[in-house]
Amino acid sequence: MTISLFSGQGSQEPGMGKDILEAFGSLGFIFDTGSEILGKDLRKICFDTPIEELSLTINAQPAIMAMSILCHEASLLKGYSFDGVAGHSLGEYAGLYASGMVSLEDAFRLIKARAEAMHTATTQTKGAMVAVMKLEPEKIAQVCDEAKEYASAVNYNSPQQTVVAGTPEGIAEVSAVFAEMGARVIPLNVAGAFHSKLMKPASDIFLETAKTIQFNAPKVKYYSNVTGAELTDFSDMPALLAKHIVSPVKFTSELSAMSEAGADTFFEFGPGKTLTGLVKKTLKGVKTVNISSVSALEEAFA
Image 1: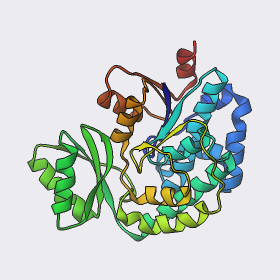
Image 2: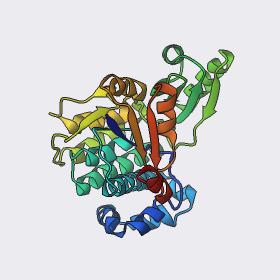
Image 3: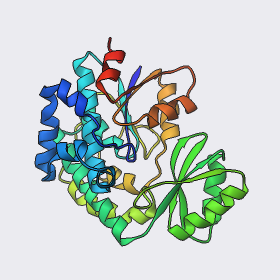
Image 4: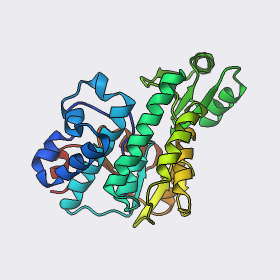
C-alpha cells in the first residue's frame, strides 16, 4: 500500500520545482490556475522570490501547494500510483486535490483564503513556536497544561519530536521547563502560533470561504491531521478544515493508522524531506521516497 505525503509550511525554498516544470511543460496549467486565483504570478513567487518574501505565510502556503501538486502530477505521468494521501498541515490541501476531493481551482481558492486569514491573525496576535526533542509527548503536553501563560502541544510529529505553540511569554515559560528536563528546544522561524487557539480568528474567516467549495468523496484513502486517522465522514468538510487551523497535527497517529492499514511505501511530494524523515523515525521497515526534483523523479521511476 502506497501513500502520497505532502509537505508543510517551512519546507519552501527559492526555485523549488523549476526544473520539473521545465521538463514537464504540460503541467504549467497548475501555475496558470494558481496565478489566476491568487491574482499574482505564482511562477515568480516560487522561482524568483527571495527566501524572506517566499517564507511569508501568504506566499509560502500557495507556493508549497503548487510545488507539491506539480511533483505529484509529474510522478503520475511517470506511472506512479497510490492508495492514500496525507499531508502535514497545509499539505492536506495538496492531498485534497490529489485524492479528487476538490478541483484544482477550488484547492487554490481554499489555500488563498487560509493563507490570507492566517497571515492576518499573525499580525493581530503575537505567537511563537518551538520544536521539543528527546521528551515524551505526554510530558510535553502536561508541562503546557500546567503553565501560567498559554502554550499548547500542536504538532505530534514523531515519538522524538513535538512542536509547541503559544504566546511569546508562554513559550519562554515552558521552554525553560523543557530545558530543565533535559530536552532540546529549537525555536522555529514562524510568524505565529499555528494550530493553536490563537488562530481562532483565522479559522472563523476561512470557514466562510470553505462553505462555498464543492467537496467530493475521495478516490483513495484520506488521512486527517485532526482525527489522526483515516477520514470516513465527509459530511462537513468546511467545519473540519476550519477546525484544522486551531487543532493539533496528529501526524504520529496518522502514520500508525496507515501502517496498521498495510501502508509500507511512502512518497513525499514537495520541497524538503521533513515528512520522509518523520516516517523513518516512527515506522520501521518501510520504503520512503522524496520527489522534489527531476533527478529524484528519474531515480524513483527508472
